[in-house]
Length: 168
Image (tube, rainbow, N blue to C red; front, side, top):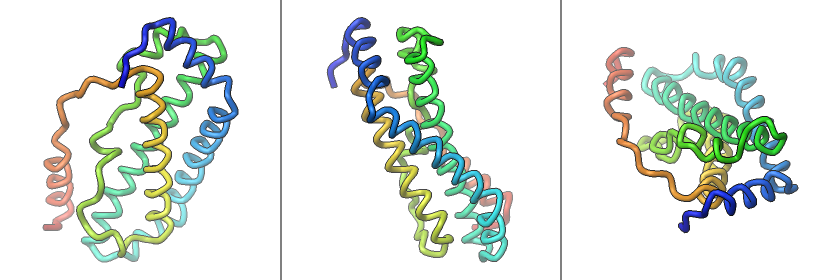
């Protein structure tokens, strides 16, 4: 991926945020955030109560993954909207802290069979993955490749959660 100069990036970023594609992506992302929050706080909570312990642990981990994806996507979209609206400088938006983050968690695939998870959660996982990947491509196009950060110990965190819930 080619790294653009600041003025090139600002122009491309402005053109993108002025586009119908940005508006559609923004609206889709925010609607998915709301839909997911409603599900996880309502029906998803009810559905997770009926799951066997191992599936309940998987539900907890995958609901965290979908939430992380959507928080990252929404944050990125809101930064781009702020630049478009003149509330934030385009050069500031290029800083690593405003870039799309948590890639290891968000781009990771569940190593376990998710067929025991509720259908709606599986659907939200798929849709959030698609949205996150689309935004990751846009982020790289507009701002260049993000420097690889040290990978967090995701598996250690999952193991700790499993131990806390008494699941092996």
